[in-house]
Image 1 (cartoon, rainbow, N blue to C red):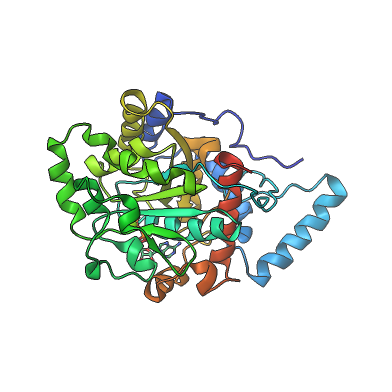
Image 2: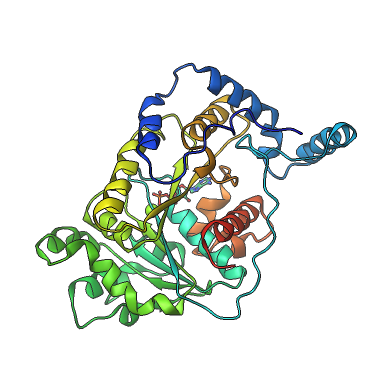
Length: 352
Ligand code: ADP
Ligand code: MG
């Protein structure tokens, strides 16, 4: 049976201090025997990581036919681990209460917003009721769903700051079938204004509470900082997904993020879990990309989603189009990847 040399012994369940230690020790560029083996494994499976080329299909078919003669087939994914075979989630007979997931990384441009939109859209395709929360004053989530945040009279900022405005009052039904709590630049003022409030960290949780029973999942798109807005998102959440760009500096700062999640879990929200690390903007054709991914698997083990999001220009295109990739380019590899992620997320933490 083909198994990855990185898989055993690197499982880091829960929010335990060793994760932060593992990350802070993992200085990019440093040689490590484990990295070498992981990189070799990733190199062996890099054809598959490109997801949809004909080349891959023929290479895979050839290696599969050799493998069937020798042993049962178990496909290695780009993370160097055997991919689980996940079925499409079953339709739900009833909906809610929602699992709240925060998409969080204080580094900008790592795929938080793209993942919020497209994971949400894929979950919607699987019959889940999805609420998206734009919790970044840049309003990119709103823009990505075809909403112009500057034209909005009221946004999530108003429901955070004004007791008379409920989240329902600012909710928008988008053409993508998901509901949205939009934001715009006004939200940046909340960071300062909330400081003087009672239970300032629980403000988002409080305004989301009346909506929780109407949805199966709430995805919060965090801003790129570890300030009070992000602490609010972590306090309101059941789980955190960390999108991590497969780039040289991607692990820098993750230790601080994990420490912040641990602190929120200890002090404000004991049920908070690190649900998974999502490798984004992966280019399996480059040694660099494969090395970074191997290092991420080395640091986080089973917390890393088997699904890896490749770097492709289709994602920036979808932002311009103002719709998810699952509808803009429904049969693209990017859409397929986010459907795979949705299957994994359901299997990990949503009602089946
Ligand atoms: P964040 O929310 O973390 O700042 P975004 O999701 O906005 O990151 O992504 C930053 C930029 O990268 C956007 O222009 C987006 O379209 C683009 N992008 C996101 N994911 C990918 C990908 N897998 N491949 C290529 N470009 C991507
Ligand atoms: Mg963003």
